[in-house]
Length: 590
Ligand code: SER
Image (cartoon, rainbow, N blue to C red; front, side):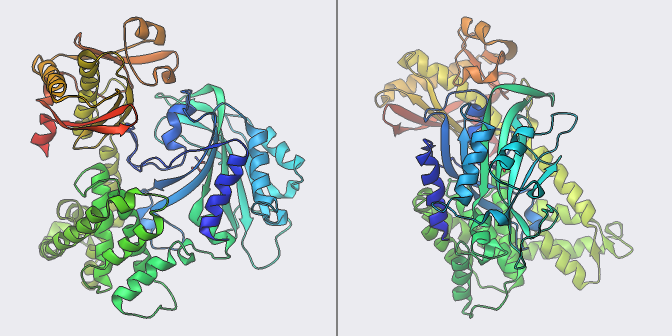
């Protein structure tokens, strides 16, 4: 089964069951400060899973690009990927458990679709715990389809979500495929690695709130996810995604650059290079540049790790370019942003590589100096904090430090490194509680506040037909899409800008209040998915100028923004205009 065929079959199957195909959302989540990257197909759909109506309807299907950087240290083995795609189907308050399972079963086993041998399939369902009961309905539905009870395991671990710290979650049922060459065992043992998970149906019955409590959702939803690369591997008899047609051409591009024949075995260095180059290419396709914070930091980290591995293999400069070009060529049909940003991607790889050579020279010097200091090395073990500092301050890769330490007969305290790293990640993720200001996300927070001011200023200047159609914030700028039938004139843009600046100069306090949705609407609060927050909502007011239903975070008073600048006004789609803008606070901190 070809990758393209699997992708198409999945979409076609669910379209034949009245699902609307929706586009993959960006990797950088819109307005979700609790995570850095879209990490599951359901993630961009959270507002809808919480009750907002989706414009495409109640049944959706798509493939979604996702990034998980939590496991980055594991990349290099045969299974871990930083960037992956997920095939998924959703019911937003439409069908539930029984239907979802029947669809999964039909897609997997019907000759018309994947036609997998039922004998090679096994399933897990939620066993129940103190929070929620055994998922009897899922269990019985599998039985009713002819699955043997020997092939269904009840596990407490069958629970999914939320994607960030809060959000929809619930019990799930997972589907496994037997990949052993010997006949399928009579009894399913989920611990046996030859049973590979291929699909996950999550039954989202709950919302985990800020207090960590599970609230029952009024309309339960279905969220399913099939790891695309893994399933392509399994269906083609490979035990690694890296052996599939999704990766082989990338390795070949690297072989060609190196002028070598295909080696009989791939090394972990090669896998890291391919994985990281692929992920970095996709991130840069969204216009992101490497930097020191958040997504930009993760991007730089990927590129640096990739360059470090290249250095180990003694690769010549520019080795990432043929890989990136191949990624763009292979995936542009599905993700047109790759081709659109090709120049930016290639130029950034080149620039980072030049910087990295300088970093290496400097890092090596700093490393030599650090190991001379007595406090840093004890009983032949180099402090992990030193290695973390080198990575953090100079971008000197951990792997390089470990390698150099080994050459000198030293070990590195990796536990210390991991702890420091984890701590840093927690801070930079800056999960925010409503009404609070997440301190490490000052730029995005300031821009979020500016978005509210812009929204209101547009309504004041252009009229109340202006409504938010989209919003996206990076550390550098805000992007705001709104309903308006024509180009906004230069005079009006100037008026809008001046109005926002006036409010900034008045240094109005930003007040956050909790109230019911009715109260909020009565007080004239605006907001996009006003009803997604349930009964109680948080309303942010900026003096008497703006009042908006929103989960925050915001700055404490408008003066923090310093000033407001519109950079661009353009068309987004029919009847929707787009403004990109930034604030003085961002410029000063850049
Ligand atoms: N959200 C679930 C997962 O990521 C199913 O889509 O596995």
